[in-house]
Amino acid sequence: MSNRQTKTDVILIGAGIMSATLGTLLKELVPDWNITVFEKLATAGEESSNEWNNAGTGHAALCELNYTVEKQDGSIDISKAIKINEEYQVSKQFWSYLVKSNLIRNPQDFIMPLPHLSLVQGEENVTFLKKRFEALSDNPLFQGMEFSDDPGKLMEWIPLIMQGRTTNEPMAATRIESGTDVNFGALTRMLFDHLKSKNVDIKFKHSVDDIKRASDGSWELKVRNVDNGSVERHTAKFVFIGGGGGSLPLLQKSGIPEGKHIGGFPVSGLFMVCKNPDVVAQHHAKVYGKAKVGAPPMSVPHLDTRFIDNKKSLLFGPFAGFSPKFLKTGSMFDLIGSVKPNNVFTMLAAGAKNVPLTKYLIQQVMLSKEQRMEELREFIPNAKREDWGMVVAGQRVQVIKDTAAGKGTLQFGTEVISAADGSIAALLGASPGASTAVSVMLELIKRCFPQQLKAWEPKIKEMIPSYGVSLLKNPELIEEIHTSTGRALGLSNELQPAI
Image (tube, rainbow, N blue to C red; front, side):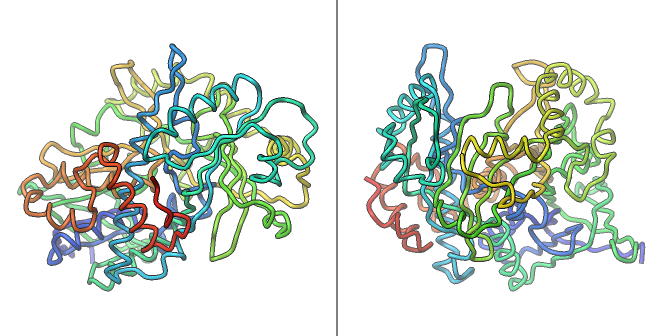
């Protein structure tokens, strides 16, 4: 079977939320294109997109303090929060379009309304939160945000966190009701079911071992059947590498110059899950705290209500850790294998720069269950050891590259790397990833299909009414989107006008 060669228009590598989103967008824009998906595992959404591999999803920058940085002059920079919120509104518009067009059903299986809170302790942090609240609450995207440093009010908002507190240290929280909880595993599976019904060829248990450019400019993939070891060759005009942490090695194999001088730094994680339904019932919110000094942004402690398998769950974390694997199902040699002559100095520079981070990750790995319980008790003073179990989170691979900030800079975020001719693109990085998937894939379409973009724009605008428009400059459009997406997705708390 090794000589079987199959030609297709588009190949998507990895059956996660990114490939699901790109495939669904392309099927709407050009229904007659042939799309093939290769996924190493047995089902869709099993790695980074899986609901049990994320401690708390539905990022709209409503409560994550690391998206609003205090500048030297004491003012708060909210530009990143605005960008992420606008991108999340784009995702909600696309999901609403899919529901209204009957392409996916039962939105409550993947999205639920849930208040988002930021919670801080200590005078300095309370001052910071108040300033952040003042900077955001005037903004139409963050309309409806409330601030309180009154213990009585906090008890009303977050009873589980406030019960049994003995400290007199000042505390404050902001709360916004229009937050959501998103189950990206469920959404990914729904989108792949939809793609299958549109004749997209989805090949599970197929691993892409190599990618080479053919003489005619197309891409040739060497694909191995995981079950029987047989090898097939597949060619396509366009390839998207959306394999989570596994994207970097495949990008390197493609040999495109844009993929050189880039490394990856894997960070693993653990979180705690509550096994006692009585405790789960007492909390109904996503509550984000402030990262400890020296901790990376992805280890901001948070206590999240999640809806998984239509059941309410309570997750706390994440505790960061280190593993050289690039995927949860990856190999211990992933990190070493990703070091190439063109990125070795970038990787070494990153290693030298990030000694405190490495030290922090090692300390986190060494924590005992009791030490983790102590961290949890900073959130839930009365937490009992027997009520909580541990879950291993998905692997995240942070991008390392040479930037204006210097050689070997560790990037926190999501990044698309594409060839100059737009024939191949790879998605690298981590959070806020899934929540901004639609914006990230629209950006990829713009970059990789510039010739078709003009013809596609009317359809894109039908799917995403705010496409190409700054929401911030059009507050009335924000109100319209809140109302229409709230109705389509069943988010009753968004039916009140946002303004």
